[in-house]
Image 1 (tube, rainbow, N blue to C red):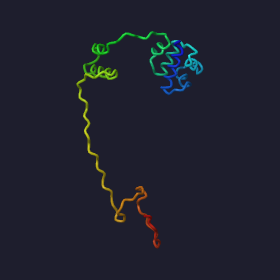
Image 2: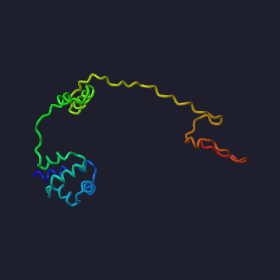
Image 3: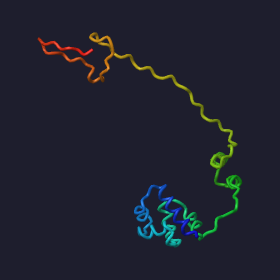
Image 4: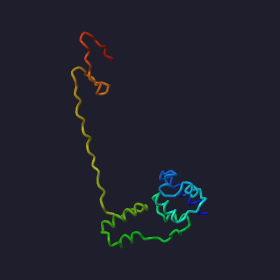
Length: 162
């Protein structure tokens, strides 16, 4: 039965979109209990409800129609390369970019002869030498704000921790 598959699919899409049941029902404009029944496979939603859910999930309504059994899945193969080449609105560079993008998303090697930008290594900038004071000869382990020595009141001596 496709209703249960549809419900599971909608629940999975909602989870991947990180939407709560209430949030999705609000976005789709349907009641929370009705959406819950759809997800559990208890109700068969209409095409209008599926379209609202698809819009809220930001997926194609056609996908939900196929899962619900309203539409048949297309088996025809589209020659994307030929379709891109035939498009009169694209220039040669745009056609090549689209072809490369399509091929890369389908695991095919790119035929583009465009060079990749080279990355040059740049030497790290040197830090300016720290200022040394005449009172201390070794660097302090205290933070810079506290590293300044405090003057003791006249007549008193303080012990320095070593």
